[in-house]
Length: 148
Image (cartoon, rainbow, N blue to C red; front, side, top):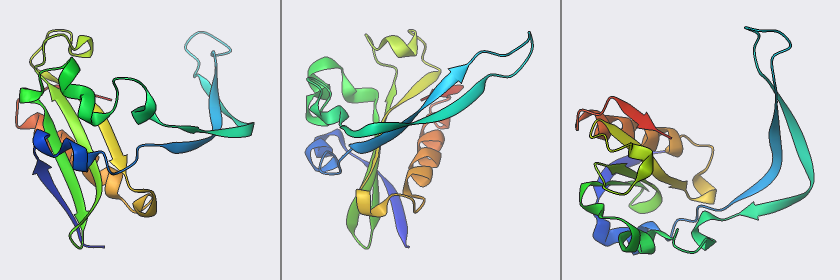
């Protein structure tokens, strides 16, 4: 697969949003406290009898084309993933944005706000490549942390 990751523009959010973020939820991990102090937490996967579709874009105000109504996107980074000229994914990184509580008012933190991979391209390394590109983007802005 000839994957190309490039920076995108906030004016391309409608095209960005053509890649669905929804996924089928078939299981969840239950967390058990350590049996003793200093012990490790235990994660136990539990399958759902009735899997469901989780779609963040369907939540009011969460669709990429609505982000600018909630936040100043001028410091955000947008990445696009293409294979053979076709968009197969994207990522949005929030940085230095007033009112975004996850940033704690700090200019040395970035937040992986959104990452999406086309269903037919999932499991092929697109998400990992987008994540690495987001790390690079944040480092170029002297961020010490990338919150997910």
